[in-house]
Amino acid sequence: MSLATKLPALSRRRLLAGAAGLAGGLIAVRDVSAQAVQPGAHQQVLDKAVGGKKAQPGKVRIRMPEIAENGNTVPMTVTVESPMSAADHVKAVHVVTDNNPRPEVASFHFTPANGKAEVSTRIRLSQTMNVLAYAEMSDGSVWSARSEAKVTIGGCGG
Amino acid sequence: MSTARVRLPASVKKGDVVEIKTLVTHTMESGQRRDAQNNVIPRKILNKFVCSYNGKEVFKAELAPAISANPYLAFFITATESGTLEFVWTDDDGSTIKEAAKLTVA
Image (tube, rainbow over the protein chains, first blue to last red):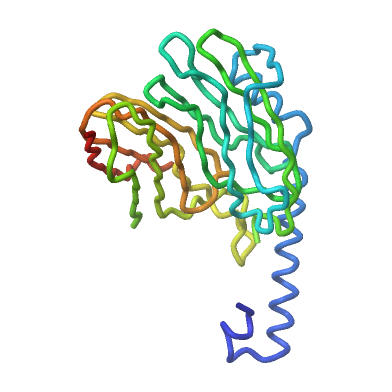
């Protein structure tokens, strides 16, 4: 929907002024977002979530579209290989991104009652970036995965 | 006003691992956006989700502003007995959205 259809009474001059203002606003938001991204912040969030334990790659799988047209709502499914028994199950999965204004996405807490360590949701990505997941197992080990999503239209501000 | 929707399979056998799909209407205002006056629109999101099965907590999620508007969450449970699944979403302002669904295990 264009501005013109929403506000038919606007003159061409006011419409142009409004468009310029809107563009200015968008640029301002961009600037704020760009400043807010701290390199390595996502790693700190992950380290804190798992209490500083070392993660090894494997067992975790992040499924996302390779190219996300709309960064406002990108489907994501995280699966962890686990029998989900009382003795051997996934306790938590922490998901972060490396280029959003804030790195946190979500932390999911599982129990053996889940039967399967898989969760699906929809996330916001402001631009093309990596999504990282850490899985904490009941034996204390931590497993990780990373997936890149290319974003055509950012899902931030605007 | 927020409304929650929950979907579970209609016929479930004991021991089946079934997918629970939830959807709730909420703007999930990220705190990153600005209004027409260039003021930051304050963050207001659902930051927590809990699912209980016959009173026992089975799945929990902490959500950040990077979760899309109208949060969708799908996860699994092992159907052990007939009963009630309860779902609670907690807002930044402390209010909650609650929903319940009956699970009938054959």
